[in-house]
Amino acid sequence: MFPTQSMGYDRAITVFSPEGRLYQVEYATEAVRHGPLAVGVKATNGVVLVGEKRAPHPMADLDSLKKILLIDDHVGTAIAGLHADARKLIDQARVQAQINRLSYDEPISISSLVVNICDTKQLHTQYGGVRPYGVSLLVAGVDDHGPQLYTTDPSGSFWGWKAAAIGKEADVVRDFFGEKYKDSISLDGALELAIEGLLKTTDKADIEPEEKAKTLEIGRIDTKEKLFTILSQDEVETILKTRLAS
Image (cartoon, rainbow, N blue to C red; front, side, top):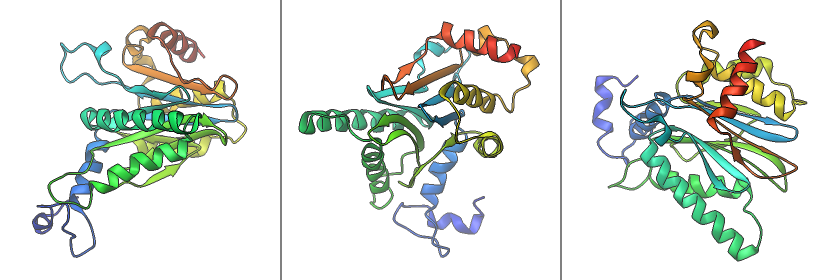
């Protein structure tokens, strides 16, 4: 992807290649593409996120790794890429969400939150002495405009989605969503589709629900309660058993 003759243009974030590329941003994007998969599906009455955790070492405690995190009561996020970078951005997003509540006495809109995150990401693509954030976030929530699902890119770009995937083999899962997604999908249907997409590249015969539940996290929010909830491991295991049995 990065030919030898191009390497002279990746010494600083402020240097463009003759083709108009910023190689440091592309390296950050590669960090995302090598991260464990995370998917999100928007329904008529809510949004669901599903993420896969990967231990850095066999002795690592998977319970200490978080793939899906809460930003505010009405919005959560899933990570693909460098967790340290994600932690910094999520902390900033949480502060911004609370500033909005204190200033306007209302929850922040999902689009405003995403713009704030991406402003910080974009800032780190144009100044020397910094590097791009090597992480993408799936941001899901419910606001006055209904269910919302966004992705943020290391370049600072963002997009709204009906169904999205970030991380390893995300292109395969997005193509799968393009074939299976329906605008009339319910929250339960969205959860089923998200899990099916995440397991798309895995042989179902090799999946043991008890073990797989340890590596999956599921978050969901509906338009009635407007509370983003991260399911327990037991709940994830029950869902997997039902899904794999069908």
